[in-house]
Image (cartoon, rainbow, N blue to C red; front, side):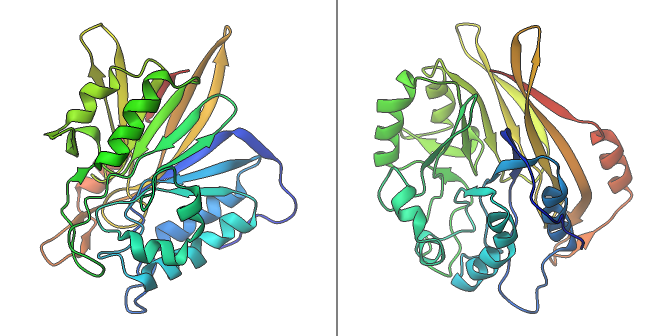
Length: 291
């Protein structure tokens, strides 16, 4: 792949969102061409986005250290270009191995032993929660659904109702898949208490989808789920840019779809007849959030 060369300008207001990149450190499992082409495309953008957010499932399957070592080497191209990469934990990840390869996250996280971060952009803050329900230990499978720990719940309840700026919440799992306050999906109701929350951005399901969460006071908040970076389902990434019309600012998420793969019972990707239908149906897809 040919990467952009020379000093680039940055758009401090724009970002790229990825999810479910499923990187393997096993030499027998090659990095998907679609993922490397995404990295190349990002580096050719002019101006460059200052931020890339990855919503979890960094590891291919069970959060091995060699997966994170490989992921760090692949993502180094972005970091070397001056792009800030911020990641979430997914159900295929393990925090211990992740921290060993990205020790800076132990300092960056606002909750001890978890990956909860806040990134400030000019028009909004991106608050990424840790929804990993880690049950299997390093190298073992976790529960697929998510949960927010009691200490993170406390941080959320103390801070997000009075957050001073517009913000988006990010996590690997959609809110309906997260155990919160003893209830699966309990985070959805909690969002109604966050007046400056503008949207919820997640991965996990490997499909581009956005739907509105409606609250009793007539307020709605959109939940956008991202495509996969490499593996199966909708494969691609999302450009996230601020637009302004008649003094009204919006954040516009635009899908850049690279492929669509079904996965069979043996774990092999299949480019079926549904591929062209899905890609054609998603062409030009956008989700618009108020700022």
